[in-house]
Amino acid sequence: MKHHTSRTFSLLCTLGFLRAFAVITATAAPAEKLAALEKLPIKAGKITLVEESSASTGTRVPPHVVVKANLTPASDSSIHVEIWLPEAAQWNRRFIGLGNGGAAGRINSGSLAGPMARGFAVATTDMGTAPNSDSGIGKPDVWKDFGYRATHLMTTLAKEVIQSYYGRAPEYSYFSGGSTGGSTGGQQALQEAQRYPEDYDGIVANVPAHCRTPLHAYFLWNEQIFHDCPFTPAQEENIIAAGNKYMASREIPQTAGKMVSDPRCNDYDIEAVIAIAQKKDPTLTEKHAEALRKLFGGPKHTITGERIFDGIPLGSSFKIAHGHLYLFQWVFGKDKDLYSLDFGKDIDTYTAALGPYLNAENADLSPFEKRGGKLIMISGSSDSCVPYHATLDYYERVIEHFGSLEKTASFCKLYIVPGMSHGPGPGINKLPDMLGLVMHWREKGEAPHALSAQRVNDGRTEIDMPLYPYPEKTRWDASAGFKPVQGPRGGVDRVAERFRPKAAE
Image (cartoon, rainbow, N blue to C red):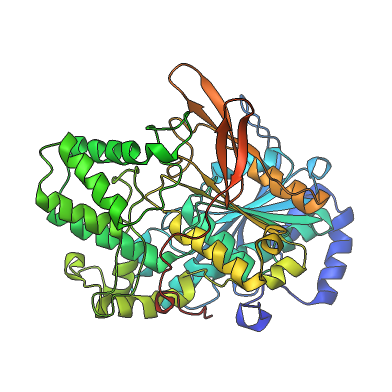
């Protein structure tokens, strides 16, 4: 979906004014540059703060300029943006936009410090949902801001501020969603690639919640099941252990029984895991078993039987697989009993209201690819908050659009990190610098392949295990060590198209 300036409340003022403005600010003294930023003309918004920040005592944050703005592209919109600018001599002539997390609603100023210290001009936004998620109840303008508009307007404003302050545009622009901003940042990342391919040269989409309305339907599905049939922490641990045990024969020796690197499964596998869990834990009743069938199976439409989202991955935690129900309150109101919502007409109403704005499901990345854009997506095999299924299937749909894996991999790669939950944690305690990888790919033309992306503990020592892009998998050869092999393609149920409506503005 291409960007049309007239329909997104462009923050640009006239070209002639900007050219003159840039000539003045390029040679202006620092105080004059700050004054110019304060007066920077913005359509549908205003600069609210411009201040110098000296190097903090006891920290490694260098001197920089902070710019804050409030953007109001529609009557119910209030989008906050924060931009940090390193001193001109320290600027690497690159801009990075950072994603947010959850329902957003606030700006984590600390997240800007790391990229700025590396020389980036950097920006982030609260996505227009301050002070909390209730701001979106019954307000389509906020839905649009949260879904896609706030991130684009942040980007446009940041580039204008950069032009004004440094007297030149950034040579390269990058977006990182997930590593500093949580899964919503990954949604922002894919919205940018799909809707506004001209905004960024390279994008990192970490644990991307791009299939947004189906994902939250999965949260509600699980929430209702847990409400009707609770599981104790001990029961949950035994179920996770059962998944790890059953899937161990598909693992390499270093991970067997410790994690599920590839949770793709069928109904037979699910029944086998339930049987192992019940044998291990006699407190698991037949009611628990039926609940597990629904949890691992995932939500389907009660009238048509169509797939809404896949289920909790085997071997992953239940704790982060439910909650996050604010999107339903946006549509049905704060007082609605969410446990009474059905997966028929109610889901249809919810999808029609939010899906066109929040979902980032367009597989046609041709405009982004043609301008040389590079995209890296990352999911964790044990992430039950934003399960890997929808991202794997999205990648498959991109392959279908471009006609081959080879063509798709020339600009877009997917890494599914074995055993990783919603970010690095126990056993998976490091990931490489994904931003650095996408920068190197875009600027040097050298695509990433094998990554030293994780460290697993075999009980005695920690081992660096390479990570390969989907569909390759890591295998162990006693004589040759780790090596890549071609893994299976697909293998997850596709979310029905009606739950992925076409994007709208």
